[in-house]
Image (cartoon, rainbow, N blue to C red; front, side, top):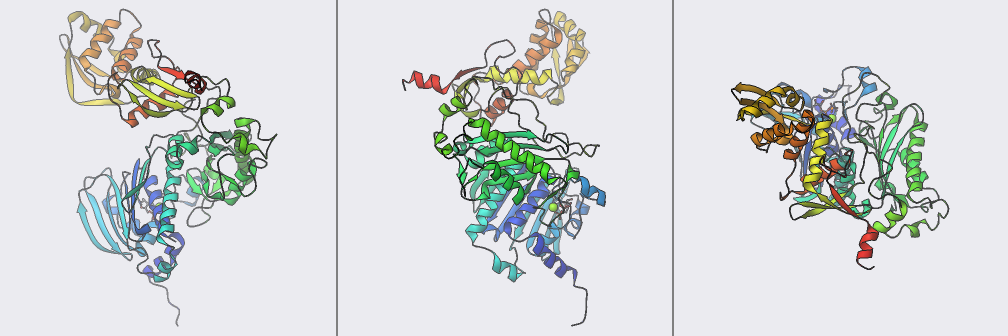
Length: 578
Ligand code: ADP
Ligand code: MG
């Protein structure tokens, strides 16, 4: 044969082999793209273990109409410009290989609309060739449907494993990403069956419960640790008590700067931390997030980006190991003294054991149990700093992690915590949470589409006028409109369902009795809070509880009334004469 340069399509097919090995790798790449596009909701539907159909819908940025085709060209990326960028990469993708590879070995439809544009684009690509294009109406975001994967690469098709194996890989993959991005709502459907649904609450704990189940989660210990020296390495997550283990390492999930990695040395660091605690050939269930400055880690080791290289591997391993070890030791303190029988000590589940572990816990956790909320992708100016939001908790925890069980009388929320039962007054708790949000300026403002006019009695109107700036400070946009009439143009979001006239009147009446700002905060949060007698769905309740867990004063509402009643496992047992 003479020497010839291969046609572009064939090059793409060959290259595709590196990136897309199996259906799960297609899904991984498309998931990463959706996450890079800052989607907050990602839906994955799969048929036949991915061979029939893979469809991923996201509500991310979308692709501009004039860039839709170029996105499928090899080495086309919006995430990297210079080689220096590699040093500070905070996106999951950067090689510009995924879309072209997937398109080369499948038949694919994409519908995408960029959030700044009014019309979307639809493309049909078969074996890497665009066969159809049209402008369409579509919600902002991207939907990619991959059909007949590997239809034109019979060799690859032959090597695919049984459908059930591929299905398992896909579910495993989705659950890992769901854990790495608790702030994103994920759903996975396989052959019409829902396999995973996460709430997007932002709490790793919530996803771990959704993925592992509550029973397992009860046997998980929080890990949170920072390196003692530079480089700054932060590690957080959960690792199992010795009572919960597996026969292989598949349940040790590690994420580095939001990237799911398979690093055998890192997982060995975890396994080693269980030395003397878990018997041989037993492995923990572990979910750990590792955050470190991007220039400390090389992610460009392999096309699938599942491997990473650390500049200072020892620092990372040592921090991981110390974090896990500390969690195990502080859980019982007994693990080291009686390693062989450790399992027996931990066999009993439930609240009783938690009581032993933290005898003085009561309501307030001494250790603030801080867990970082989420990754933020913006990269800071200084190269050595860990990006804002990574490894830094939003607020310290003041209550233990509570799981919402249900609502009673449309007034109280029942929750279960490590130390027993909690009965929470939904209005009082929500009032507290919103009050602190106002106090800290951590709330949303909503512009009213049609400004609302409110008139007040002359005396009240005077007072309101005098304190207009106080209202402005709390998110209002109010202007005097006529005699005793005001025009409201913006309000704190929390008041979106409140009767504004009532709120303003009550606030103004309060002005005589307390400090003006205090009156505004107190009443706005009160009127914004869920009412007693209001039916709440699971998500609403979860939302209130999650924020209460990090309130400064979670036990009292702003009027100093209790927000919750607590019964320990012991108290309950006593009541039942057990
Ligand atoms: P990479 O992710 O390495 O940049 P890809 O081939 O995966 O390469 O994607 C190419 C480009 O297409 C991305 O850089 C991005 O600009 C765009 N893109 C791909 N998927 C999406 C998506 N779901 N939403 C928005 N843009 C996307
Ligand atoms: Mg990509």
